[in-house]
Length: 639
Image 1 (spheres, helix red, strand yellow):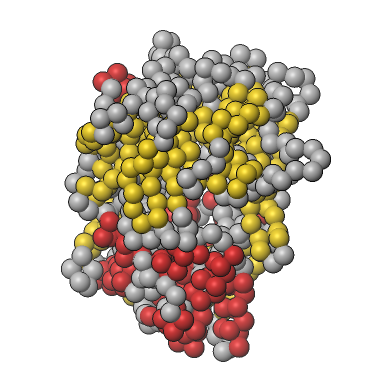
Image 2: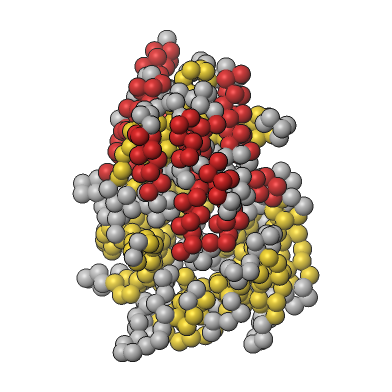
């Protein structure tokens, strides 16, 4: 039985703000090697490495400072070669954007060398330079020397599909750009079988497919993406005629499969209370679909293969105190990687061997947080002002007796949602003695079409009212001390935190916004540089007076509580000007505000020094404005 400590000790902020020690481990095809990213503190670098499980030797492949170049993802192409996607920061004029490149690394050589798999043609060429060079359509399991790669070399943003030799970098075009297809999909045999088209000007969209062995393309599921949501193709079964897809059944997304020959669709799985919107689970041994990831199921996975059901059950029996996720298998599925965590136990990776019935711990994500006091994330619900039921996760410090100082923590997105499991922000706040509430307000994903559509031109309206109502509920339930509540958010959550200071200025003691949107007019205006500008206007709105009314920047005079603004200098998702202009406006109005700009910082706190700085600033700010709960909680626990 796992021993759960009941400590009320305030840990250093750096224990929570350090990047995970190891992330994204991936087994080689024969299960004898593991590729993984390890984050180092001195120097502050991230290194993609390979561990040989027989010799226990580690080979370093790619080192990154997470600033100009970052490892985005990686995957084994064969036992000797790892394919790596690199994300690179670019600037064209005043517009900042991200480019991706794909490299192959042969780990069998004494000296590690990488080669870019996209090599522009020499001499004069009319080829368009692809911004995204890492869109792999298929890793061709039966052809370990080639991959299928989508590159928009003929027409910008409309890729063709190429068969690329990962050793020589030679490429041969298999499928020419056509039909306004933006993304291609191959079947399990490596044949290009499906394309999703979208006209950004009109919103017209459709799915194009062809039957096995045929050249002619057919069309299905036509719709206008600006007005409605259609199906989302997820992948093919081993049977090349069967395609799995998501579609709404009433108000909730469900999983279907369609026989492309007969055009007959069959419902595979639905959840009457939540969207079924996870990815398919494939068996590397069977080369077929065996289930789907579904966050609202007890194990986060729905298996319809009995062997995997029994295997999952046996793991849960062996590790009853954690949630256990099978994340990778060797090709023969005898070796596997298991990820485990709980609300208060940070993630750990285990290497398992099914014939030997062994399970060995490999990596800890946050080694300094293994002795945390237990803090469960309780799924609760409250009723919004219009009678709608809203769910959220309530996390209380160990031994807490309310009402206490509380953090209201709206998520980003806004088309995202909160889950249970370990969350380093929440863990940090509860260690400081604060209660934390993370509402899945309207606009969040997972709760159906009508719920999600509340975000369409709804920023600052009903979805903001849901956060206000959550705060009143916390007070009414005597969880939150009315004069000791701070709202803290990042990205959209940062916008919601700032907007709360405008719409409900007497409800919160303080507010913290990391990388938040402050000016919706500016957000919509900047979208004109990108293809999806019509979709941004559809989501946010285009009436300037309405946008101003829903922007914290234009109502800054109403703000009467202390604010902490934090933003990365090189944020490519929410530009840093959003926080700069808000800070200037608040300063001009003599408001209580502090602004911290993070050098070279991105939207994801990928740089270690910046993550440390943000948590240190939040810690100091909260202690000034909410008081120090941790010491009183520690006393209560010791009693």
